[in-house]
Image (cartoon, rainbow, N blue to C red):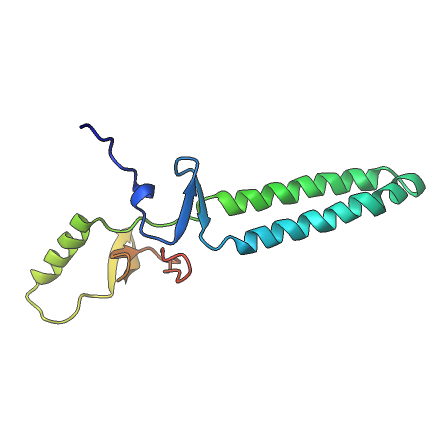
Length: 151
């Protein structure tokens, strides 16, 4: 039996949901997204149903047109922000984690592994912090999120 290899998103250990063959990534808690969607649709619907007819006849039809453009822009940005990958760092594979543990064990010390590592990037020393959950040294400005369980 020939099985195709599993993609990384199919075995992803974080608290996320994936759609469209891994192209769309969402949080498991989708309630905030749906609440935001309902509030935007409700307020925009009320604006277009009651205010726009008055504004178009008594002032100028440009106001409803601008409102429609802004509505489309807001909805597009909501979907883009909700369905895009926020920049999740991949966790270490079991082989990578075992290799890191071997490097730590080869020092012969019984103390815990170092929490930071310095690497040179374009001649500058950059301090990387270790994430014990993801088993990686994460770059500056990255942190582990307790909600989605990812760096």
